[in-house]
Image (tube, rainbow, N blue to C red; front, side, top):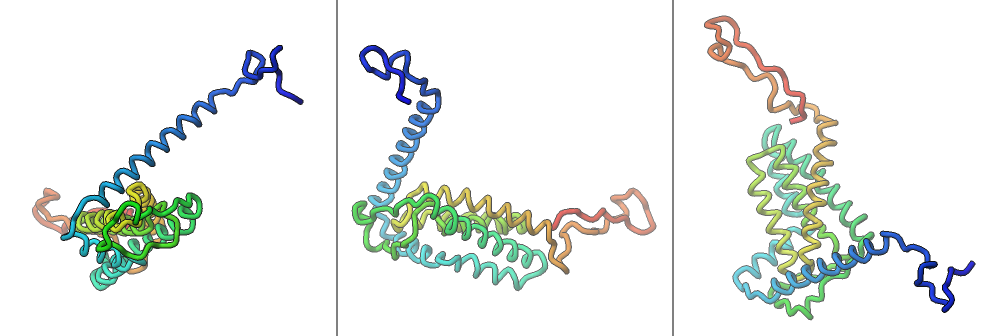
Length: 243
């Protein structure tokens, strides 16, 4: 069945079917994504054009060290040699890395399939170069894993949150600095890392590790706090959380 036309055979007149609001919204979304890609490319070019010879070697080494989450796994190994709470943090952190890595590499990169940046066209100095991965660019798997580990461990061990967060941020920036990711890839990897840490923490809370007690369990309270001059000191109720 043909579309209704006017006397001149034009389908754009009052007899034409109403396109509805979907088409304008689609055009607006396309325009927004185009502008975001332009900003993303401009930020990448700005980093590439900024001369930082002092940082180049250090960030290149950090990018190498973050391959296969070697930095995070090394920190987890150190934590595992500590007490119950550091061991718990190491276990949850490694679980978060596993979730983030699978989500980024098995799902994210296969769904989006964004091409890697053209490092030569951007004139990224050779001193920054690391091997260009063959996988898709979006999202950054290195960033996802680093942020997932930092977030999960930081929840269990709050004292480690700031240094691990700074390390994860440095890993994310390093991937842009060496020319293998756009800033947008890193931002998406960070969001994915936070979500992966939340999933790992939820799973850990649902399945407590035998022998690892809550850090808030059964702490004695002094007699002065209870208002009694003698007798046995009271105890606080045990915590219901996993840590």
